[in-house]
Length: 398
Ligand code: CTP
Image (cartoon, rainbow, N blue to C red; front, top):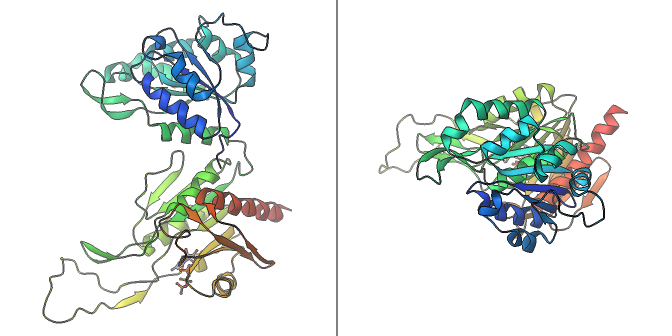
């Protein structure tokens, strides 16, 4: 499942050496289900061939403003009207300047002025060109007009130098695109707080107690909520790359997670506790690394606060129950004990569901009963959970 499925994306490629990366980007967009029409500027044609894009996207690739429209209209007008987003990647300093000034001297310039679809710009160039006040001013102009600027990364550049100016990675660009297209989704205007990962409870400065939670289900929830228009705060103890356009608060321990969740929930519409919070912590973590000795080591454990049970509020509260036996009875008991609106129960003893893997098989449980879902990707599980959250929010409003 992808929020890019069926979306009309104009991928505009301009004359940067990073143009070759746009081929991968076109492929990723295609695989995500997007309908990609490619525009190559005259300078882009020096680096890449139209055939590379046509073979991947199976759709229009054009460079010339005077290319006839396959439907008999005017090409730039038709493309502009049908587009869901205009993505310029890579965007050179020259193209950024042309977009900021509104120059309509080629196909891209005409589409940019004709379309009302959101504009996303992913710059790629040498550091000095990128950092030049002229380029920065043009980018500021585009941002002021509502464009999304996907910041370039830092690293090796075509000149051999190292610095800022590398085209953002395709996954990041797709993330921004999905977030932009989802701005008017069914969670627009909502603030969702999502937790993810297993907390780490220190034993000494180098060791900790934790669990097998990877954080993937929580991250899938955060991304899905973002792509449905929500503002998302992700309180995470997981070692995963931060999702774009999501506010990530990094924590380690249950106590830190409690404080971060309390702070984030002040204006939340929903809290989704996908994190596997350690129930116990070491009472007195050592300040120096423990050395092994002759005697057996005994750690005194004390109970951690129950975050979900203690953070109450007018917002929707969703729990997750990872069980190895008596799934529904255990999850139902947690639903009632913690006063939750919904609990997502999964049997983590199955090899294709739960910790670490890409899929999950869950049962959604609320006061009215249980809905057993089939084996789904974690993203699909996230969408089904969010469908319930949307419903719960609508009921509250009513
Ligand atoms: N949870 C929490 N704080 C804790 C423990 C759990 O907020 N200290 C949350 C989890 O994030 C999850 C839900 O409570 O959403 C259920 O977690 P789980 O560990 O399955 O339940 P526990 O109540 O800790 O019960 P047990 O570990 O005994 O099964």
